[in-house]
Image 1 (tube, rainbow, N blue to C red):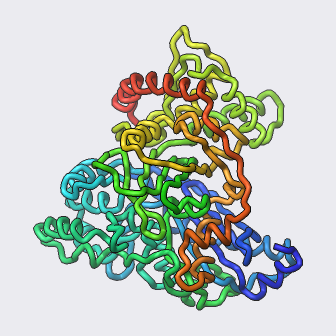
Image 2 (cartoon, rainbow, N blue to C red):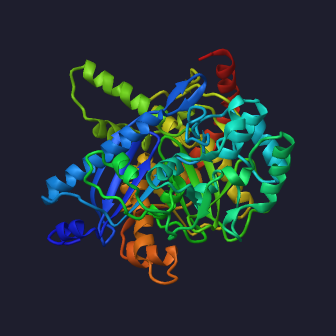
Length: 533
């Protein structure tokens, strides 16, 4: 966008605002008519492990939302010397899944249970068998059914159940809705109707009836909307929740709230069939938009949808960069103890770079990055581990390479199924913190997936930008213009990116590491059993 035009664009409200609640950061991005970011703001936060449950306090939700918006507004004023008085459209996104249950007065019945929890094993197993459809532990319906199995007293008082994105949208608009992609992480979606699967609703409904509950499942779930649908407007109360200064007016239209999976697809232009993307940060997931359903049920594969309802096969690992970040922080402590000042980005660049020059198979080293439980390897809890034999080649390069490989180890156990199912993939795009250091994340991911991996120039914008694009699509689409056409023709046309093909030596090295990884899982299981938190 021409810098001269930007103040006019801001003043006239020809903008779209996307806000995403990630696992470690809440980010707000404002885009102009050309879809380029104008300003941003953020707020760092962390989940808490309280009473055996991974959670975030709802007070932190609002503090983080308001601070990220305040920073964005301050940046607009500083860069363009104009106050931000309104925006054209708003969209909210967040970590998918989890459990937020409210009574008829809007009171939260139990603390927010996030996607990171692995406490719903029995429920997930029973629902998968009932539906003949994989229900992962982190899905909202698994949390609900587990609460019922546990005979938790709050269940009888449930009036509404939603996700984090749905909760924020509800409080700002009064609308109890979800985008179809986000809804597909609550309860299975039928891509023919773009609504909750009727057969599965009926099957679970019969079991709920036997429990003599005072509510029906379809009555407590949010309404499902498609990308491009109108999803309500900012209320007076909602405007004050977002902007306590009172400068932002009510009446701004909102698009359907989406999950981080959906915004990742949008931000990488991976919403068409045979495209895929990998989001790698605190957790990591690979998503492929399918031409047709998989031949059979696979417990390692989640079936979700694009924001337009197309079926997507997703492999999700709870753990990715947390352990890597912890090691980088340790090395930072070491440099500080030496009296050497090295900024964090430089440390990542150096340490990640060392991982590219290590032995292809990491020199016999082994690591597990399990900060939390890992459903792909059937571990209810996590214990980060580093293991070597006396004969291992213990060098910094091999050490970093082992941890980079480990970040994708659990993911790889699910990726193998794509090969067995003969899933066709034309392109894979990467985004998230794992790809921030130039080339490193791409090369490691290409070795793990054995396909070329691309990173777009806009990859660093992330899910908040993807959410802003969905808000812009709702605002500006013409006629029956599809999301795929809108992104391809109006957002990503002419976009540049870098593609790295898999190196056969790296592919073979990753395969050798994975053989060691599978055998060593017994060590991780023993640590979980014997090292109590």
